[in-house]
Image (tube, rainbow, N blue to C red):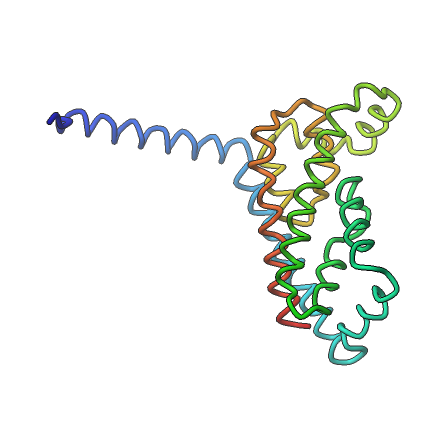
Amino acid sequence: MSTSSPINRNAKARTLSQKTWLTHEFLKRSGRYRFIGQNLWKLALSLIVLGVVVGLVNHFLIDIDVLMEGLFSRYSDWTILAVFFASESFLGLIPPELFIFWTTTFNQPWLLICVLALLSYAGGNVSFFLGKNLQRFPTISNWVHFKFRQQVLIFHKFGGLLIFIAALTPLPFSPISVIAGAVEYPFKSYWKMALSRILRFFLYGFLLLKLA
């Protein structure tokens, strides 16, 4: 039975240490640490603000469950889910938090939150492939690149990190997914980075169910 010598183990340890240091230096000099920190702060701030607003509305104005019942009761559950999926697939026109509120009217809200999370993730994938096919429609492609020119520049700088952060934080997830497809970002990397979208729904769901 062969074993590695102490010299080989030390060499491997030095190599790992060097790789870790180089990665740290790259993240620091490229601004990725700052970018992550700023957006995680925005996520925390959005959760705090949402929690305060929901708490105040619930306490002083109207019960959130009653409000959601009045807003959604005229539509079937399938219609609401279809509207949500369409919104998540086409530029995220409706805030997903509204639909997470809707789950508070059910006896098993976590089941609905899981469904919403998976639909949102699937919607991001639809957005990605829409972006990938934009070249067939030059007018629309030019409009998207102009409308979201700042996000395009950020994407070229941060790549997959932007997808991960956008899926998790208040950054516009669907437009960034469109941009990822439009700039030919590899799908095998995209779908992994976008999985943080599911985590976002559980974070917001936990907060809203505690407050509702």
